[in-house]
Length: 418
Image (cartoon, rainbow, N blue to C red; front, side):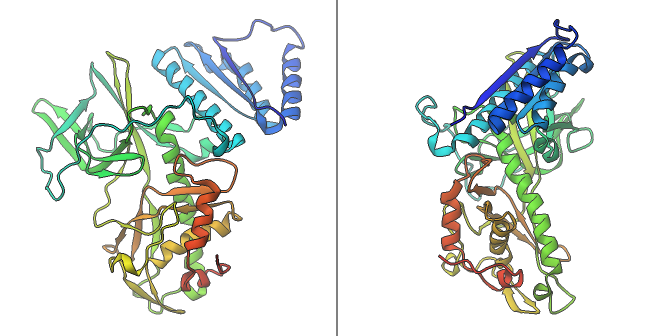
């Protein structure tokens, strides 16, 4: 059995061993290592200091050699900021852990040193209470004490093993701070949900700008809530589900049996909310806190299936039982959500499913749309998609409980039986 072998290089500039032939020897050695260890070899390199990126061309070429020959790795220029260097170490550590998880499999990972999860001490917001302008909240404004940043997760960069976090402007013009509700209004298996606003501070005080959003952070105390350590898995799952749903929508639009019997309406589309990570850095304590933030979906939430085999049925009530008249007959709109999970299973050659589907059926526009959030991805092997990935067990449970209907048939999906 080949070992998992990782190298980490730290450098403050060009290497001192610049003798003729040294560069070629390094390249040949790396090629030999990757050739022997295959995907179990990785090389991570960090450039430290305020030098130009060109000073680290040797590190970049080493990492590129490993990637081109079937290994994994990443180069990051951390600069001279202690905060950035600390974040980069966390990023490399997360990447190493992710690779180890992939190679060993979840069931073989040691857990003795991880310690039990400890839930935060929190009080839920009172049910049914309207939150107005004076809701109990914490405000953080850009200035001497705090640095506020907003990032989007770039799927293409992630797939190319590059830095996936791209800093962007705050969502609203003139915003220079954040306001976060102190009591969560929602709780999941891993996260708490809070109402969230961007704010603008001027000579007259601090006021909200833009629409209400939802901020999510960990349910547990012993969780590092940086974008690399905690939020990256959730952004990866959400972005993957978003891309798959776009492909699914295209397939549905071109399926002859799923065309509407009238032109007044068309089959619903599935849309997963895109998310950003907002970071708050305390310049005095050097601490950093990150929140996963997405658009607030109005309406009553419905859970359609889960990663433990649950599938919404008739006994769960009559909410969202709207129907549509298709060429193939009358179909419940929510059947498109269930069929999406089945379609992903077939589209990915039985390697994964997207499940834990929940959200709201929005019928305010011209055509119906399911707005979904917080999905889970269960995989049979390979890359693991966060803590909600139940692996093969989750896939098996879905295949056992899913019942094919007219939409699955209209998509030409093979019948899924026990």
